[in-house]
Length: 302
Length: 302
Image 1 (cartoon, chains in turn green, blue):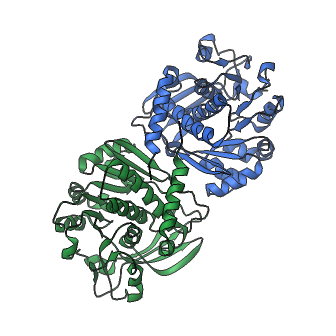
Image 2: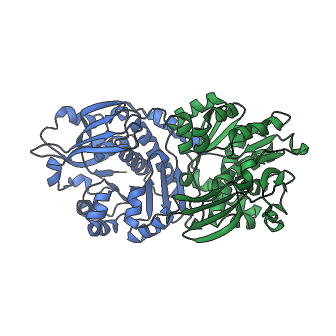
Image 3: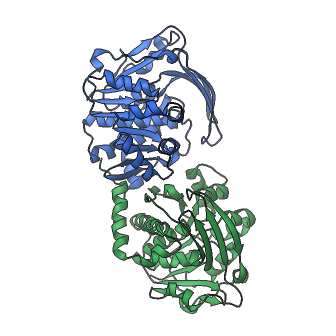
């Protein structure tokens, strides 16, 4: 089924102990779309500047990614620069230049307006809500990512948007800040009252945890000896997760658990190389092999 | 098969947001023995003072715990006092009084000397090694816990002891300090060169991870809405793990994975109440029900 993503398309400058790039295509919607396109066609809504050339657009070509919704505006593309610590477990943001992204007003092409699966990447909550309003039929699954900046600075807007969302996909500290509750089970109960019926907590090197009324499901992070660059891991997780769900068109427990695994698979590939390098060369058979590896990592018989 | 544990038996004073006890029986060997006794008979070697009364000894009675190896010495029993933060994720040690434990020289009763499964709880590495020398036949599984104090202060002794150990069971930060390596897979490779063929990393609220030459196995922590007191969780994990292994007398992959689950089950019960309170009232059927719950928490079908 159709999958819509709205979010940032950016240039990233990244430095880690394993290397350095000055200007690589990145952004949440980009990682999401590339990851999800392994499972299902993706419709992308975002904005880039006139410095975003046909060479840059190439990342979306040859994949099932529709970029009619990628607006080209006058000015420069959103730019982010960050540097990782020796162990990759800390990150310093060196620059955030919003550029054309500052004036972003998502406009859905008509053919996107019946999207059954919608992912609202981390942008202002009022824009996320506006996108949901543009979708004509209530989507089967609307999922949302956000960050501390919006949780503290636009809490009312975020709360209003969360009323219309099925799945909230955030990290530990965001979960705790939003719910004002340290314990993640109690945090989930608070969040269910805000609208979402499913909470997915992204826990970095510790994997991901899904909580809904049926209970809890945990997936570890795939153990890697040499992760190179965590940038985009969370967005790749979301892409694998939503891409898989949209591909089966279901949201039952079986599908959600599999989606958690495929999300973790895509996230784990992303961190293996710099920026989008690993996803660029990724093959379907590698995805399925790693999903089986996740089974080996977690399964036991009583 | 016979399971031997050597370690501390203590009085603990514990304060958490859920309550306070001034003097409860605790210590690594105590938590270990009580947890393991749900699976297999346990032989305990430790030392207590003359303030350790028959009322205190009662914790071991009515269970399959042999305390012929529990030495009663003149003086006071090892005393530890600690206080947990609001979220239970930080702990301050308020007092550590070694008392009779300072002169502890483990002496194995003859009937303990053929133990096939041995757990060396966190004590001085030269004492751990001495215990292994007293065991007449090379045990089927010798497992060891240690802490930063010995890793930094008695590194040579610890390295010497590790040569004779199959399983090392420590936490994240200890793993990193011992191996001088942040990445846990690379850390495991370093540790395998020191002797152990299996590394089990205890990760608190994130569960536990086992690494051996076959690969990695992860178990999440059991999600609890109201954990009361983390004291003894790691030792209860070790007790459930070793108790299960000794009960089946095997160390193949299937058995080790189940042991990881039963370890996590016992650890999760311990934190539900203060000190040993939850283990005191624990029933076998509760253990098996929670093990099945762990399966629900982690299993998926591809």
